[in-house]
Amino acid sequence: ANQALFSMGSTFNADYIHCVFFEKDDARFAELSKAVAAVQLHKRLRVNAYHCEFVDGIANLEASNSSIFRSKAPTLVFADPFGGTGIPFETLGQCMNGSASELLINLDVDGVARIFLAQTNNNRETQLTELFGNDSWKNELDANGDLKRLTVQILALYKKRLLTIPDVRFVWS
Image 1 (tube, rainbow, N blue to C red):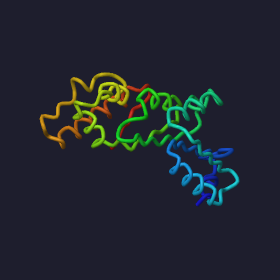
Image 2: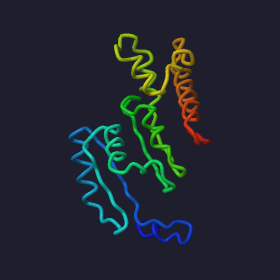
Image 3: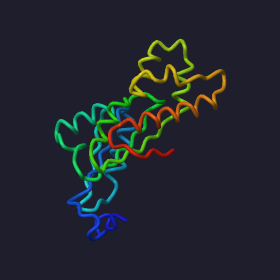
Image 4: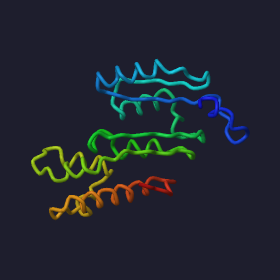
């Protein structure tokens, strides 16, 4: 399978493919590191795991290579915000600056709904504003006691917000 990544002829010419993983949790990072170390990699496939938050990892990548998210090189970013927190909308926008950037997000709409419904959560407004990149959620989300309706609204709003990122033309769920 690794060989196929580099044998696509003239349609794909890359010096290498670099995979970068970020994990803050100690136990998960140890397991991730062990799994990456156990894989026999193609010589043109590079993998690094960083023990940090996603946002910090993205910032460190940009600090070490200012054009990493601004080039024509294919870039795929997979983001898995824990319960809808930890990956600000602004950071995802940063990752989409390249002309060949793709973003795969595991958006936990149930987790976001729990944040929205948790009136006693002191960080609620900050978390939702960070997630959506603005306070549009205040006018666009209305639970009325219907969790299913709320999750549909959350997904629709998130997709709408993703389409505000420059050059993003397609969003699928």
